[in-house]
Amino acid sequence: MSNKKILNIQKLGFPWVTEDPFLMTVHHKDAYPPGNDEQGPSTSLAGRNLGQDFTIKDGFRMYHGETVPGFPAHPHKGFETVTIVLEGLVDHFDSTGGKGRYGNGDVQWLTTGKGCLHTEMFPLVHKDKGNPLELFQIWLNLAAKDKTANPDYKMLWAEDIPEIESADANGKKTTVRLIAGKLQGKNSLDPAAASWAKDPNNHVGIYLIRLEPGAAFTLPAVSKTLNRNIYFYEGEEIHLEGTTVQAYHRVKLTGDEEIAITNGEKEAYILVLEGEPIGEPVVQHGPFVMNSEQEIIQAFNDYRRTQFGGWPWGRMDPVNEPEDGRFARHGDGRIEKR
Image 1 (tube, rainbow, N blue to C red):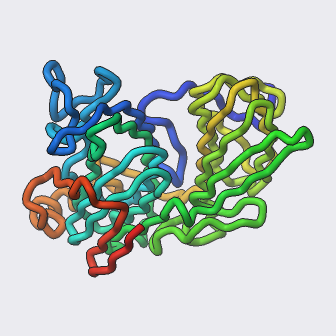
Image 2 (cartoon, rainbow, N blue to C red; image 1 turned 135 degrees about the horizontal axis):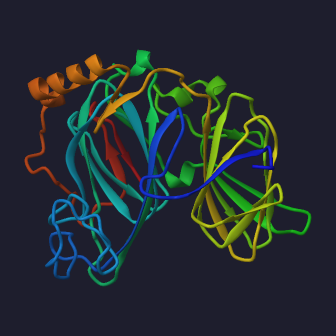
């Protein structure tokens, strides 16, 4: 590729390709209909492969849910999930006794560490209108020393997440939501305590960028060893250092030079993932991410033996009450309400 700042351009698939320290990113966007009394879709589910419904039909998927869409109780070990909800609601339950409801701009930062069970259900709380949902889930690896951390989660509430607004020489605006990292002298909220993102020297950045038509914005130089990828997931086209990139593409960029982004004629939305690589072996088997095959075998043995503490919620796809607002109850009893 002639532009030395652009290392690769790739059409987005499912899931999205990521680089160390990130493991995977998925983008869910579903136009759910009004809900019923069980907070599921108030429409027929005939013809769906319930339990494994990953094909959009009538504008939405049920994923692993059979009554309420979403992901009933499942195990994770050895990494973190960062769930960014742009629109809609997510109900969380886990094996530590934690639960909550978040959405519409909120972010959940979950450290699975030495192992936990959790759910991500998408309650359709509105009976009189649709329940659209859009979210990203980003898998961020843990360093070997932190894979035995106690499972816990941290909420980054929408009202608290820093935003950067800038205007270019023509007055065209760019807005950046700073989920993790530092940009233009502004710091994000703190990530979870065991996270690779906790150390600022690891330069982990998770940004959501919205550019007005014609707006220009520059990503700063960080380091030569930085892995930097941008995911242009909605819009028409952008221009990176003079190279035109169509929507729904990933672009791998150098990390030690400024990157000029100029938008085309339609509003553009970009996810940026960057960070110093952990640089350790990665062995993944389904929901477990460790450093060796032996550790994966041990992870499965631990799960079979302990169920990572068991499941205290009865049903495997629990949801909160329809009228519940946004809240978090942690395993240690701490309660946050919004």
